[in-house]
View 1 (spheres, rainbow, N blue to C red):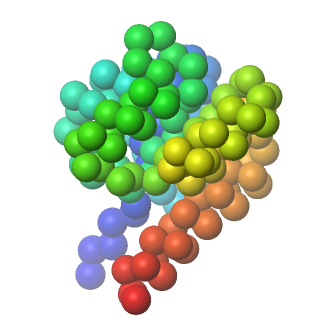
View 2: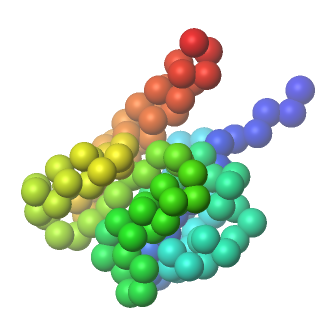
Length: 130
């Protein structure tokens, strides 16, 4: 049997995040694609193949929350983990209320990200088997 690892896409305009974060996510056992903008992600072949999206909140052009809205308009319900350098608890709660699976403040630990992805994929597994 051919087992395919789940695809996690990272969208962040910061080069250092786009280089380091995919390496970390691969260590957790996922396939990863990285994008420098929301538009680049929306225009990619990976849009509908992505099973979880790690998304920066503040980006030039289309922001993370605006990308979330666009995905909703397109009927795409991919779980989103927002990442942000702005440690604003009200913003975090607003993102969660608008449907994000999680919101992590930069810098976040590898453990926090691993636990978040584990929760998302264990939830998806339990929904698929119900």
